[in-house]
Amino acid sequence: MLSLLNRYLRFFCLSWWPHYQGRVGGLSLQRLLVMALFWPLFLTVQAINGLGLCLDYLLFPGFRHVQVREPLFVVGVPRSGTTFLHRLLALDERFTTTALWELLFAPSISQRYFWTGMAALDARLGRPLGRLLLSAERRLLGGLDGVHKTGLLDPEEDYLGLIPVWGCFLMVLVVPVPALWQLTYLDRDGSQADKQRLMKAYRRFVQRHLYFHGTDKVLLSKNPSFTPWMQTLAQAFPDARFIGCIRNPSASVPSQINSILIGARLFDGRDTRDYWRQGFMDMLDYYYRHVLDVLEALPEHRQALSVMETLAPAPADTVLGFYHRFGWQADEAYRARLAEQDRKAAGYRSGHHYSLSDLGVSAEALNDTFGWVYQRFDFPRP
Image 1 (tube, rainbow, N blue to C red):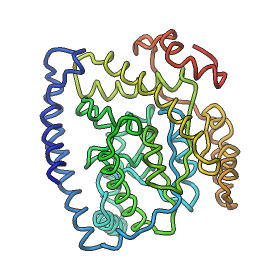
Image 2 (cartoon, helix red, strand yellow):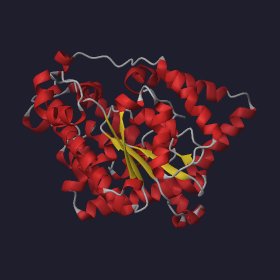
Image 3 (cartoon, one colour):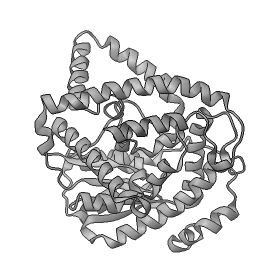
Image 4 (tube, rainbow, N blue to C red):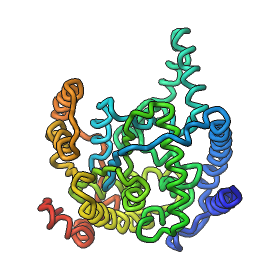
């Protein structure tokens, strides 16, 4: 507990005036203002969540004995169809996956029972609070639909459940320091102590989730940020299965850099594009290499590769191919849901648009860094 409090204090101090490894100078008044708004809200939410997590040990102590059986991890390069595949798999009732509201506001069993009870009461009254919340959600999250469409009830990445222990890489926007960048190289560079700390916290998180949603369910986790954790996860969950997702770097790399720059512009008024661009180019090169290396080292029945260029035009056939590989049977209800997704996929058009010149990502840079990916998968080069 003391080490966690020290981590909070250290990151609080470092967040106000980051130096971006010497690449950016000066003071950002925008960051000071954002931090002045962020920290009181963040610490309040974490304090409430922490109280709920402590209450679980008193009210629901049995969660510690829940067995996590054969979890499925959807990992891979960001912007490579992980969200699409996650939501296709989540249509199968054998799985349980985390929703955004649980991750942010109800990581504990206690909070989940409280909020579902409040929702039931609201439904009896005609859903006045539900409609108000939906309107507020669209105002706050609607602007992100072109990048990553999400809502409080939608399936979301469960690494957000590791925010309390600073195991969520997204927090690098708040505190851009090497200690958080190291999460993107955990298998390679992480200490044994850090790996054990994060796996212990994650297992407790999953046990709580299964306790609430059903111990007979299979956990479905989608996290591109778990790609550099694959070896650590495979050791912590020896019966886990992994689907690694990749895509032509010409599409995935600029898309991911654009996504992070949207967040960076919110947190800091200075021009930090060079810092994020170089950091993500190096990180994504490692992601491509690591996901393929780890998948190849795992037994065939524990791993599969999803290529976005194959998944997008034929989602149902691709998913059913994974089921066959894992020895699973898809029931008729799930096959019907997949068929409906096939029809929807035929008319989908991405709303995520950006200019390579604005991002500072050239065709030469993509070829220099990811030339081996283009060659291995015969992707068209930029």
